[in-house]
Length: 145
Image 1: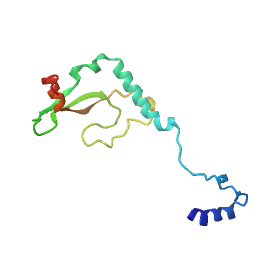
Image 2 (image 1 turned 60 degrees about the vertical axis):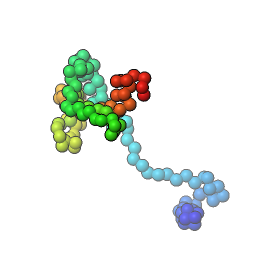
Image 3 (image 1 turned 90 degrees about the vertical axis):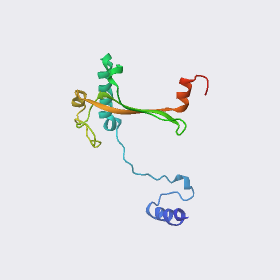
């Protein structure tokens, strides 16, 4: 109702060439910001490509010894659905200017993709694995569940 009673009459007054008999002839334009994929993703692609290059040139990155189990908690399946929780860390190529607890606001080492690609820093990422009781049952007593 507001569109037909307020907006269209105002539009007809401002744009006399608007065709009143064909409401579908009205095309409204909306202003929105656009950005190129290069402008938005350039640094992210550089980080991705640099990380892949670093890990693909060394078999050492895929070694089991790289993963450090920090804590493992076994639980009683009678009272929870999680049998075991495993908390671990492993090294990864690092492209931020800071590292450690409380550095969630760290920024890239540079805005220049070339400088980012040269970063040789190593950081640690944390991971957690929760093993459901159903998986534990299947491993201990195959075919039971």
